[in-house]
Image (cartoon, rainbow, N blue to C red; front, side):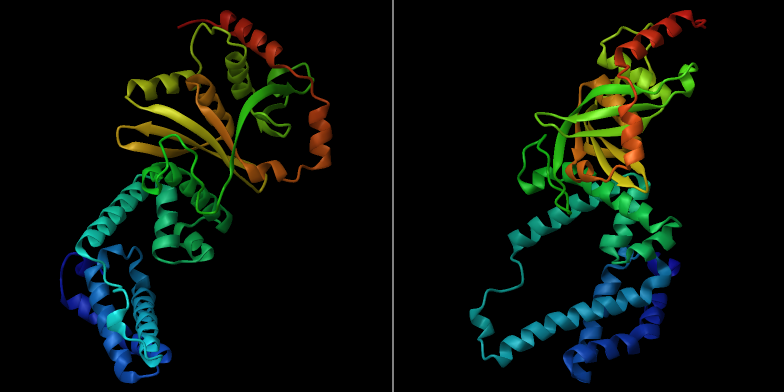
Length: 350
């Protein structure tokens, strides 16, 4: 495969010869004719040689080539059925695109590939393997050495990011929330309060941010760390900190680089862990960056960006013990901001 990708012809011929009989056998099962099957395999071989660079996993060349042969055979079978029904193919709309349509499709393909290539590495690899090479969740997980659940999470985050990147292609205006491939409905939320458990040691207390549906009654609580809660409380209380927290610094750096944080999305709950994506719009268009929800929300507060939640997350089952424990926590947004400012002013300043 390395030699073939480098442009050598002999290795390609050897690879095709190894899997030729299997491809012909599969094509014959579809077409019912050994002669047609050989022709279909020949067309598949040409397609494979033309698009060899798309094959990511060299060890899967055989299944990839045979899959192309099956697709060619099914297309031919549809054409044969039209002839059997006595339809005049010459009177039917041509399936071959005209020059203008072909140019438009080529441009669309290039833009989609560019958007996929701009994804974070983990998301990009998952998209290539799952959507473009047709591997299953389990096969992608084995390929990337992660769990199947992690693969689903990466694909979900990738679809969220691509929805923004490809908004222009779908006729949506910039800034419009676009449904992802799984018809995700996004609900705009705001941080309504921070709750904190009781205890003498401030940094050992539990903290939770409450994301409240704008114009609605639904709320989504998420556990966060004490440092993230402190930064969030300062932003919510519009308190002037002597020195900027990490989120404010990151937002300023993004702005200084000529980009902006467009929105934050809480995308998924997997095995008790929430996932988020930060949509950053730069000179090359929007890109999605994976983040913890607490970090992402702090960035949104620092940059004045919109926060959205996958609507399905409001329906996630919350253990009764979790709900009861959270209900016992007092609202501590203002207290937390005040304590943080006092602590900052008492720190030594290098």
